Each structure stands twice: as C-alpha cells, then as structure tokens.
Image 1 (cartoon, rainbow, N blue to C red):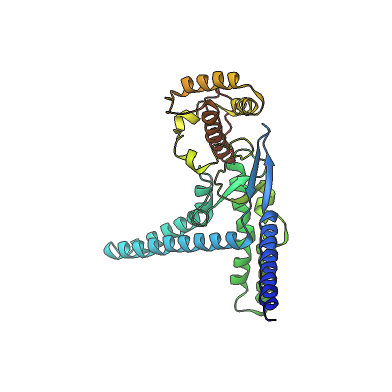
Image 2: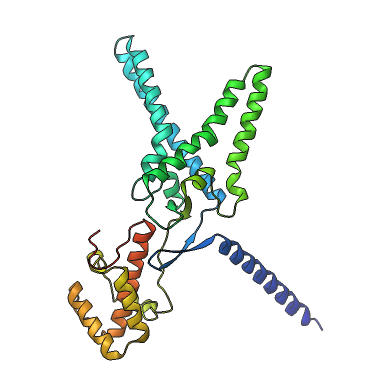
Length: 311
C-alpha cells in the first residue's frame, strides 16, 4: 500500500528537474546569435549578459583606480625627495596621466588583437563587430567615447550639484541621466550599450571552437582527438574556399576522390601518414582543425579566402 507514494514523488521531482533544465536551455538559447559571414560560414555567438558586462566594468574601474592611486603615491614620494616646487609639477603630470587612463584605458586594450580589457578577459568576454567583419579603430573609439556621456557626464553633474539647492536638481538630473544609460543594456535583447548601438559592436563570450558534428563524425570521437594534431602552419595552408571544397568532398565524393584529395593535402602540409590511418579519418580530422582555425580567425575579423591569401 505504501509503494505508489515514492514513485509519485520521484516522478514529480524528475518533472521539476526537467522543467528547470528546459527553462535554463531556453534562457541560454536567447543569448545565442547566428552570424553568417559573406563567405557563407555560419558562426554561433553567445552574447555576454548584463551582469557579466557589469562585473567586467567594475573590475576595469578597480584596475584603473589602482593604477592612478599608485602613480599618485609614487609622484608624491618623488616630489618630496626633490625641491618643494616640484609638487605642483608632479600633480599636474598626474592629472594628465589620470586623463589618459580614464579615456584611453579601454581603447588601448580593445583595439588590440584580443579586443578585450583585463576585466573582460577575466570573465571570458570580448568585443566583436555585429556584421562579422574586423573590429575597426573607429568602432572602438566610438563605443568608448560614448562612455564619457554615459558615465562621466552624469558623475560631473552629481559633483557640481553638491552643496546647493539648485545643484540638487542638477544632481538628480545626473542620476536620472546615468540611470537611463546604465540600464539600457537590460532593456534590449542584445544587451547593447548606447555606445555599442552607435559603433555597431556587441560583447560576446570569448569563443571556444566546436567541431561540426554533421561532417566530422570521426573527429568528434574521443579516441581520434589525440591521433591527429595539426600545427598552426598546417592549418594555415588553406582558406575558406578550400574548406567548402573539402566539405563537398566529404559529403558527396567517391572513395577514389577522397584518396586523391587526402594525398594532395598530406603533400601540401608535409603530413606523414600514421599507422592504420584511413583517408576518410584524415580528411575529417583535417576538416575539423581547418574549420576551427578559420572560425577563430573570422571572430577576430580576419578572413583567409583561399590558399593564395597571404594575410
């Protein structure tokens, strides 16, 4: 008589876990965007959440303040060891240094190859162009100079409003201004700042390339991952055009064609055939490595169109 109760309890718990899992999958799916490049390659990007972006921003602000405070203390110590008049010079130098740190900290890091500040790198984020192209200097400058309007200007309003009745309204205006801009990423589906909207950028999770399971069935098996290890020079041998050709070969060609293509690739990349290596397994493994390499390059805005492209 007491047996049905545990079964009902287990089934209800399983249903609750299943609903929770489905809800989490739906939440993650809402943050994924499919980007098709001009070459026809589809890349799936996961956008950074508002919390992740806020956390990265706070880390960067903390790093900036550590830099400027450490510089101020160092200049103060240096000025005391020199003449008394050097204090004003040191303070003036610090103000200039603070200006550059405040305005060019983000630009310096995001205009580099990793397109990420230290805060973003800690949380696994990076800036990318929304059209799949290279992240240009104009885009980086635009998105970061807008930050001064979003954060710096309302902060100045608050500081100017302290200590007077009229200034209180100015401080309130500054708070409302900052509220509109700082909460803007929460109320749009792509979690964009106003600077991102103007610059044509978004912040994504740093990509971890995955193999395409529809073709690379053999490369997807755990035991084959350690057998085929290609160097960067070997994956640099071909471009997007050859990747598409290789995809057609894997999908539609005869074993004889696969053998010919495998022989050409082995010669091109100076690959020595492994014991018991089949042509199909080699082609699938090389296809997976080449696609992973090209996807990573395209996420950095670098396209290698074919084997003759020397970029």
